[in-house]
Image (tube, rainbow, N blue to C red):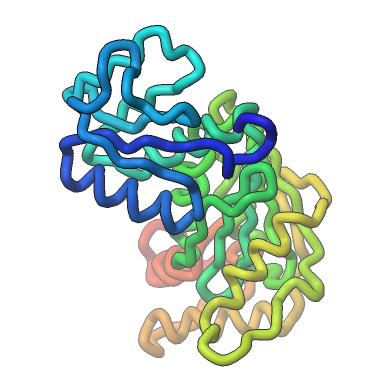
Length: 272
């Protein structure tokens, strides 16, 4: 961004594609950014007609926008089927130095995920545990030296998440994972905010330095073993309970509860 203040910059949305136009305008306005909309034909040769403060122009290749010698203006060639990618690219251009991407995960019942760049929240998700690694992979795919911080509030879910992140990497193949003490990060929720605690905790944890980890090895307590066994009964509709050896593999992140139930049923291995 120029002069360190994104409010001095203007993003021009100049596309004839209906869906791209409305999605880009809606999301950019929600983020409080200055935008201008133009018809592609209103932009003359060499970017003639653009506002003087223009930093980014979002359009498709078919819109045939000519920026010519306007080297201070970046062109984002949007894919109409993926407006989000164009918006993210425009925001990265405003940031200028492509600040570090930090992803925080609060491993609650429905893990909350916050994605920050230069301490600005650019995306947030709340998804089932098995989907966490896929969301992280998509968010860091084009990031240089991304950092993932996992809260330590739920040891079992956190261990599973860290194990699932082993094969996830950023643009350069490097993914740093930190385990963060999330004590005190869950905020008080006032009226109308119920259900947002995991997301807000994720944002708070993203700003806390943690301990770098590659794998998390825990010695599960008797209570944690019982929780896994109770969950196995629930997932199998009361048909079976996994033994302690399988429960320990779940606690270590080697298996999900569903996989442990399948093993117990004899789908490939004995209960060991």
